[in-house]
Length: 317
Image (cartoon, rainbow, N blue to C red; front, side, top):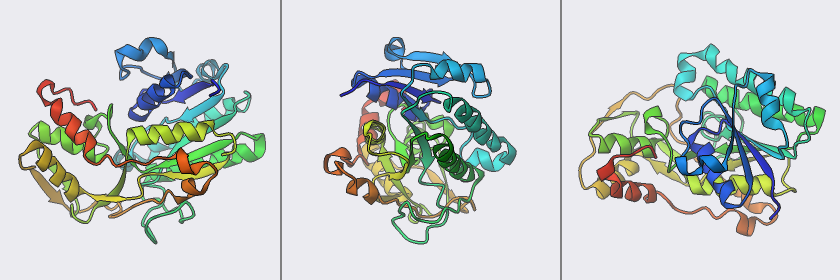
C-alpha cells in the first residue's frame, strides 16, 4: 500500500479522531487542522502532526496544505438544531469552505473527500431506500449548506481539475462520539440512560427510523474511497442500508442495562424527517466492491461495550 500524506480538516471531532486512528494503523502520515486538539486520545497525539489554525486565516490554511496528498474535509460550524437557531451563523460553513478551496487550488492535491450528510440533504424521501439520484430538498440550513458545499466542489473540479469524493454519511455511532453534543441517538440515549436522565424524543419512537453506521465501517469505507484512484468526482451514500427505529434502540438499551428507560415524547420537529434509509448499492457495483465495503451489523456492539465501562462512567464515546 502506497504511503500518502493526509490532512484531516476539522479533525478534532468524532469522525476525525477515528479516521486518524484508522490511517495511523495503515502507516499513513496524518496531519490534523483544527482550532483545538483537546478531544484527541493522549496515546496518539505524538503520532499526529497538529496544525492549530482557523479556516478564516489563509496563512494557517497554506501551512496545513504543505506536502499534502489527500484531504478529508470534516469541518462544520453547526448541526441541524443549531442551524435552525442561527440561520446566518450556518453561512460561515460555506464561507470557510470557499476560503479553504481557494487555497487548495494552488497546491497539487490528489483528491479531497468531503463529509456530507445522507440524513439531511435529501429532505422528505420520495422513495426508500434513498439513492444518490434522489432530489435534494433539505429541510434545515445545515442540510442546505451541505448541498452547497457539494456544488462548490463540482465547480472547483470543473475549473481547476480538483478530484473529489462526496461521502453522504448516514448516522454514525461509536467510540469518541461526545453525547453531550446531543447528536447521534444511540450514543446520546445510552449516556442519558446511564446518567439516570430522562430521554426527550420528538415524534413517535416507533415511527422515527434512521440508517445507522458503526464508526469502524465508516472509517474503512472512507479510507478506501480516498485510496482508490479510479474513484474520482463521485458522490456516495455511506450507511448500513437498514433502518432502525428509536423504539428499537430503547428496547436494546433496556435489555443490555436490565432496567427501564425513562423517556418522554413531544411533537415532531418540522426540520426532521420521520424515516430515512439510504441505499449503498452504488458502492457495491463499483470495481473491486466485492471486497471493498464489508458493512457489518453493530446495533448492539457499542451498547454492550459501554455496559462493561459503566463503573468508570467515562462515557465520551
